[in-house]
Image 1 (tube, rainbow, N blue to C red):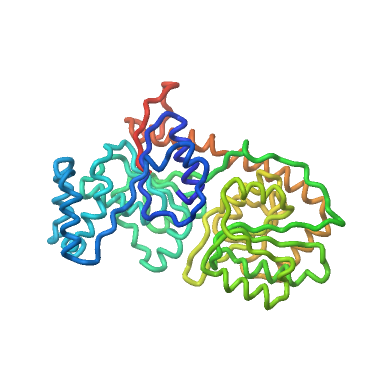
Image 2: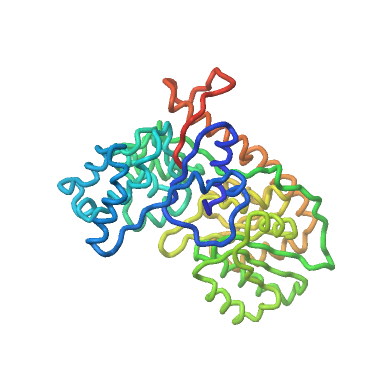
Length: 416
């Protein structure tokens, strides 16, 4: 639930009267907890994976302890998970058994909604093992359509395409990629990520000719975010525009590398790495900023963005955005209308756009108005959650994707 867009879908389903159980694939590491997790008591709905012991004897003993009370719940699934003739070492090592343990005393579900392709593969496995029987949906975001495929090959999702009932790419870009990979067109529905625009006040942003201009970036400190290029671009124009400040919010493995780059370029007085923040703190940072920088790139391992939610939040707050011609970003940031776009890794082009927004501050209001309008029309979470429920109901009735006649649809039990 560290992904806010997943959290927004979960709370949206609960608000609409549906039951949701949550199965993360790992425990979070941050001490800070999103307020909605407490408000909706989501931890009570969450089942974490059971990690097997490295000691083989203890692993078998623990397995007996876990499955004893659950044996009569779904004995067929348990025996399937131990079929070493079919599943080989995954069965004999009890890997499959430990995988299904969190699911055995849950359900049944109408919908199994998996975020990211590898989780979809897990959903297909659960279906194959008769652990779950609900309709299987997979939302594709970014790394699962880029880095993952580079590592495991273009046929990685072949079995998922066969077993899955519906696939929800978050952009036209990923829809085209799914078709290229062999996913049946009739199983694809674009479902975009969204935000609650009501939580983002749209202020009138005024030129700041003499005050400091605040540039902001938000995201994990990883290669695909491209922060090294925005830092270099800021360093390039620093002497000409001494009244700028650049803040990067997020944590990640490249923190030390970026700190070294900041020292090397002598911009430590105006470029700041602030670490991880809660959602409310992010909104405040966006409110205080003047320009959002999102210099996303395709990393050397093939990893790509989807459409960063931070861009939607920035547009909702009336922030001009400078980003790159990367993945599905041009579907949100329309060059010179809702923002400015440059080629990936092009420090000179990025520097020129920084100069442009500093010298043409009347552009801020124009971009702000267009950006807010676009997000309200295409990325409003309440509209999108209504659409998602409509999709779910379509799959659980005889007429897929057709509207329900009832104004009070029956609750769905979903696994996320």
